[in-house]
Image (cartoon, rainbow, N blue to C red; front, side):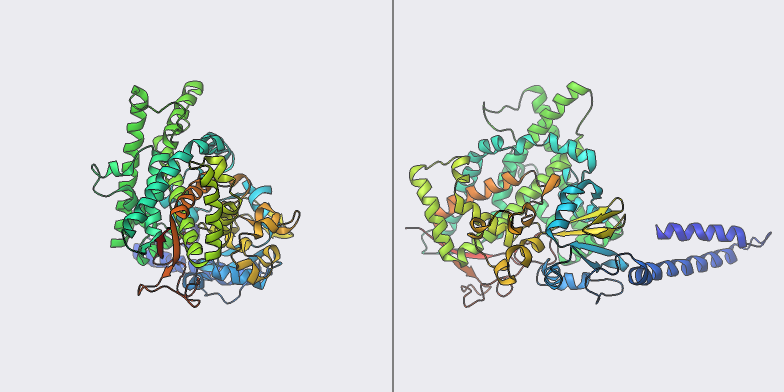
Length: 556
């Protein structure tokens, strides 16, 4: 925008100031360039230095003042122990502030939402007064798809209604047998690694990521992903992993591309690798969608009576039904691919990360592991094939999963941009203001969950101690799936899958601890997050850096 403004001003100034009859093109070019550079420099000085420090209506809000002139606070965030640790420090410095202001790239002001009331206003009361900013769409959308995640206003309401069916509780009841089958297959992997040894170790993140991706293949795409290997040289999971887990230079390209679209013109190997993976994955999905549509049309694709439809089949059947009723196409193939990438991201990486941190807690908090196993074995003794309602009736398991999601939320941030001037909690928010929603802030807020030491402690029983009308009882105190109209529609899917996996694993194995790079168990505090175990940063999810090596044994 600034470049266009400067170009327009230069053209106008030349029309006014150019002497009549002078046609020296070289002189005109030099004058134009000088005018352009001078005006661009003035605009940038105003935007980066003068406006945020002397003219912005947000300049009086609490927040850090020690920002880099060009990069703002982004260098600190990039170098931090976790993707959220810097924001948590700010929240603890100004716990009562509804918004914390910080400076990002090139003087851009960002408001970090920091109170229950402000979260409720952004996520519920004024939810459709905020949209995903374009740079966030470029940063995240090229990996997780556009779909429901980036739909806004009436389009979001419409899309949400259309996809509500496959994520309803009745649909989850039908999917529990699939989740349990995949959980048994995962236990088989543990058994294979263990063999006849007294104990063994596996890399949890990699193992669980493959398992949850296999589940996605069946529940979202309606196929076993292994069947694709015969027709595609690189598998579905490998392609998706190349997009999501890039090398450091790839993350830099992604970050710059979010601000200035350079993706298609950057001649770097890391960028070529990303673009090729993105192209191959979408080509693979397009082939799956088109074949399923053809099979549904000619009756080749069948499902058993009472069997839950996979999400792709559901979307294609619903699209055809609505086309017959209205004569309009609700979803194009590209729309469906966008949704499928949304569901793959939410149901694969997020669930795998949650399960990885679950195993970390079980391996490092043995009393919690023993209590959870006792509850599960009591159920299995009377009901060896538990259904959805039986599994969701395990109260301590429910509390355990919620506590994992509170302390280690797989998705840790979402961003918004105000579409009009607003006043929230007495703060004037101008149109265009950027808003950061950082889930760990509410999950560890001292005014919500107690002192910093209590708020950061892992305690599943806290969920039973919550009292009505206290801050911790607010739905906005727990935002692992966000809240309000934009709450994740797949939350029941994720919880059902994670619980089914833990029920099977805990009935078969005991988790002894986590290992360091030398293969020795981490003890004496080294097993704590921040010491021997660290968060990956930068990362789009709160995953452990370098994976997590968990030692386990077979139950006698």
